[in-house]
Length: 109
Length: 113
Image 1 (cartoon, rainbow over the protein chains, first blue to last red):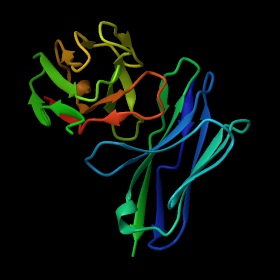
Image 2: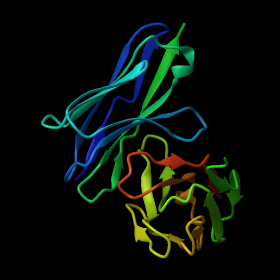
Image 3: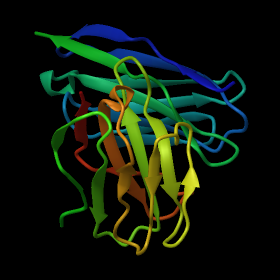
């Protein structure tokens, strides 16, 4: 079967750096996505990786290793507004998105 | 720009009743999707449409039906609701089915009692 694994919850301190990991097993691969979802709101797109390596976008970076079935989202200079759930999703060989359950990130002052 | 709009925002529905969740986008996106989101689980695809006039089944289609009569609208119908359909439902769209980004509506919180 296909599955996406990510930690259920993480806690970090304002101003610090946090890395949220995602491992996947899918039938085929056509890209990996990270979305942010604040409580009670819709998911919003953060990043997309289809080739190995690091994609940087401001305070957020996303890394992909296709051979290891692994990605991480790196958040720098954490702010209280970064408290949210972070969803990892993989587009499989049929171009269907498979979603992880999400990682709830709690930021403490 | 409105983007993608869902209605209603929330609803309490008696088991056995039918209901249609509405979804409208004004971005002229070809692909549209319906997901349900339950605590502890990832978003699960119910139905999708890659272009107007076509629909397909996702991971959890049973008990749901969709139609795509035009580009903008993609309603989701529950013919006879059951308590296990209590969930938050998200509609999403993307320019094509292979695009890198999907845009989500604000969700419909449905409780079946």
